[in-house]
Length: 178
Image 1 (cartoon, rainbow, N blue to C red):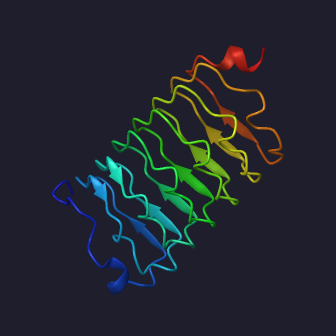
Image 2: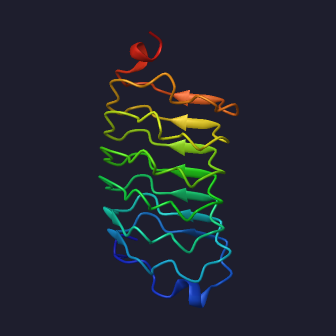
């Protein structure tokens, strides 16, 4: 519903046992600090296909059980370096189809369970070699349709579970294999 412009207030107080929340196709532009409080059992949060341009750095801090987060198809130009730092159970992160131009090299460092990351169709010019440094469970990474012009060959060192990396429609494929 495009008439919805804000996340429902006190959703965790009204429904503290929620395991999954899906809020899509709205006009929500901002995820404030306290919008997702009191949701200790939440495992899946789908915020795709909204108009989100800003997420407060501590918006997800209380979602310690969260396993899947989808922020795809929004208007994100950047995300704070500590935005995912308190999500130790996160296994799947989807931020595709946004306008991201930079990711801090430590943005995923506190995500030991991270397996699937979709960053496709953004405007990322590079992937820092430290970006996935502590994500030893990583299995699938989608980096296609960005503006990546080079990638360090050591970016995925030590990722024994890695099964799939998609670099399609970037300029880096030749430099990666040189």
